Length: 110
Length: 115
Image (cartoon, rainbow over all chains, first blue to last red; front, side, top):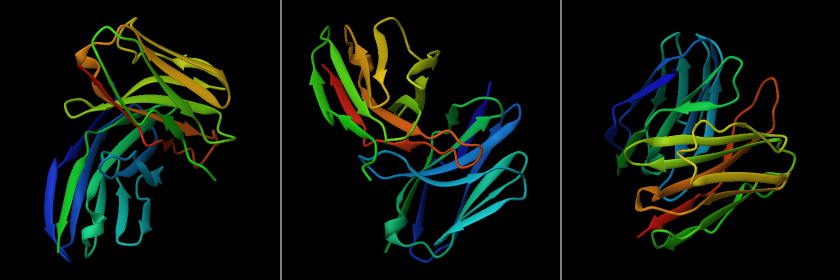
């Protein structure tokens, strides 16, 4: 059974204080690892897909990286508008569905 | 281009009543997913349709839950009878199946409260 564990559960940062969120996974053959952002009262919003170890993707202040066991979402000089819950999900090779972690709730204070 | 549309956005009902949640996927997407999100269990897949056919319903909690997709632009999730433990946010997501870039796009969700 695929497993996704995200840490920490919650993270509070000051504006400009860089940090990383972790997503550890266990899957029998990784088809893709997905990062989503979820704002309160809204549906998850797609950020990145990573397909192979060593791959990196960037979007504004966010950079996602992937190894064979985990993925990191690095947040550089965050702003209050980066406050949200960040969800990680994996897709197994040969399957169409995703297994989600429980997310990291990020709060960035001005 | 409109995203995934869900209705109603909020539903409050009493235990034992029938509840129907609706979803309109993004035009051109051929896969549709229903999820349930709670604080305790996070985001869980209930059922997955491909080209309007149910492919994986292993996440449907029990016989009280049923889902249909009569055409490519509409799906329903029905709970009958509803119970307080069904209270959660239900999301619909759709996807266009491709070799690469096969991300799912989520709707705004329906917050269900069963009293």
